[in-house]
Length: 248
Image (cartoon, rainbow, N blue to C red; front, side):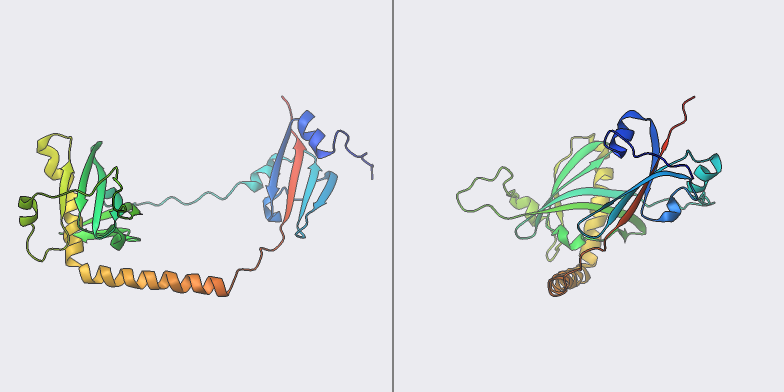
């Protein structure tokens, strides 16, 4: 077998700097060029026991390259239409006050809600009045500012006529604060929010119980992870194959 002298200019580094190269990187040997002719091989051992092996190989054939391509996925003949989406940004303040922002036809709307939007965490969709809507909510929690500190977003003081219009015993309601769009489109912009608050009102107890259960689960998971720390990951053995790119 013909002997190949060691690579100069820093080994593989010099090869990468001065020779047009192609290559594949893999932990799974099935994702490498199969049965290549190896011209040069060098292995670097890491402190954790893992290794990185650099292989300079002869340029692979078209068949060898084709074997690396993933198998084509069968297309789905029928795709059901997705429900409409309600995408909101919610800032939850101490108590049960939430500032909501959402877009309707490119217009940003803003409202204050009596609902603590943490009740809706991890709820991908909801159904109300026969319509299913997907819910994407980015929820942030803010504490009430200390006494004497002026908040850049103070809590609103609702006029008495607004509060008196809320039906007695209703827990899920909101007040629209900003809608810069055309007045005739305001009802359509608020329709998803109306449906969401109606859904929360109808499922108030179940949502509260679900939140208590989720919080207890988070505490239990944190305690388990603290008592059972994960072992360090096993050392990885990576192979990097390099070959000279054929120039036209």
